[in-house]
Image (cartoon, rainbow, N blue to C red; front, side, top):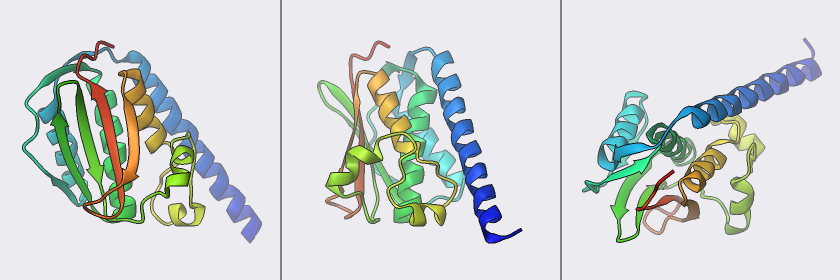
Length: 183
């Protein structure tokens, strides 16, 4: 195969991964119903899954011992996407959570390069890949992780906030859910 054919085959493979990832998300999201979810157990499960996958993840506690009504698999998927991105670009993910009077905030931070403030809105769009050269060398990401996390937060009446991690210097991603979630 010549270089052009090899590049084309790689592009087709990547498009197939993108479509498969999107269809998987859409199928799972449509079928899950909200249920009372122990927030601490859900977060601990995500971190344990990351550890089993060999990822460098640190859980900062104590975690809130609170039960909220949510679609747990969707929220877990969103959190796992954020953890995966943090490890891919920062080498480690630090996870914490807090409950205030009005909301649950799950935070994932990393020491990586972060996302410039003027690129954060673009980073939240589906299939967005801010640095194609870097992404191709960092695993099989298809540019849906942040978009899925943002969509999951919105369907629960919340939001995904991206900022600079003051503690670690890289990206800080906050999944913020209202405590009165009823989706």
